[in-house]
Amino acid sequence: MQNQATIGIAVGRHVGLPRTSLSLHELRQLVGPATDIRPLEKLVVPAELDGSGGAFRRPQSHCLLSASNDYEALLAWLQSKAGVTPEQRDAAKARRRGRDAGIDGPMDWLLYLSHTQGAYRKEGERFLLWAVVERRKPLSSMTTEDCAAYRAFLADPQPRSRWCAQRNRERWSPLWRPFEGPLSLAAQRQAVTILKNLYAFWVDKNYVMGNPWTGISVPRSSRPRMNIGRSLTVGQWRFVLDQAARLQGTSSSRRLRFALSLLYATGLRLSEAVAARVDHLEWVEYPPDDEDSEHVEGWVLNVVGKGGRLRQVPVPIDVVRELSSYLVTRGLDPNPDSTNNVGAFLLGKASDIGNVAPALQPSGGVDPRAGIAANTLYDQVKRFFEGCAQVLSTQGDCKSAERLARASIHWLRHSHASHSIARGTRVEIEQQILGHASLATTTVYVTTEGKRRMKAIASFWQR
Image (cartoon, rainbow, N blue to C red):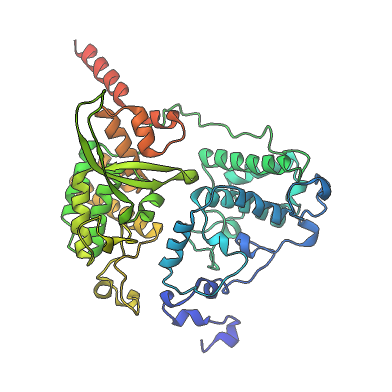
């Protein structure tokens, strides 16, 4: 700070304050709006590039959108996608512990996007930045040749120093960039698919006269393989459970153990798990009927999944018992049906954070009902898997170590599906449990026939 006049760089006020005391609006002031590499909410599109006079624009009087330029039309496209529920938005706000209370901005809805909206924003934002900063053209003036050039750019965004940064740089940070590096063929295909959707929406609303992405495709990998999902073997899963049982008895370790059981038993998505509350659990009973003489009862979790679709996911009684023990450690009632647990999240904040990391301790203490952010759980599980990989490496099991080093929280969803179907669960039942819109999505987890083929050929060769 003593040399800031000499070097021409000033240290911001935020540097000397705990991160937890700053509101998002304060953090977003660190980088000003500009016509440069900026997040969507900070990008300033010059008038000559904003598409108000785009080469392929339809007359405004014929358009079903009130948007007068490409930026506004892009936002309208994002808002047309299924967003978060009011409950999910309130939960996200609550995790900010009131630091943003009373501070509202016109672009704040971009802080609370569904996963679909987030994926679409990323690709729309990238293309808009490239068009304005690199190509110097409005989106509504893009030709098929421009789209082909952007497809090539995705394979190698250059210059790297301008376009790429490490993963998880937050959007308010001066270090944020739209890319981490070259996109894989699968990621390129997803980008092209989403951008085709953007222009199809615009064509449908009579905003532009045609879709320049029509005919643009990305080649598939030349390596033939069947994608059966990333999952752990049964043996690797048992090893993971054994390592989890060895963790110290901290609040975050207890949360991790319960989260592992919950995710594996139910196949929940990360976003669904962190949004689930105790009172979303329901005890149900199914009496004997003409098809089944057995009386069946148990717990189900009411889940709002992709597209706002509600489904009921069975939760094994052992997992609910584990939840009861976990609730007690948070100072809550062990009975999920208790009115004292209404509003409490299944996965809560670390109650002993003051002992582990005093700087992160909220001034009013930890709310036992409060939930956690998705990235908190993702990072915790990722670090845990990496620790498991290190143990396996020292034991000489290099293949399993390499697999666990790559594993992430979504692998538990894949593991649930593949293990459950292999043990006899019908595919259509798993489709309902996982919340897949198409049965074809669920069938990728069917590994039983592949295993039978492998054993049959091995037996044939031995004979």
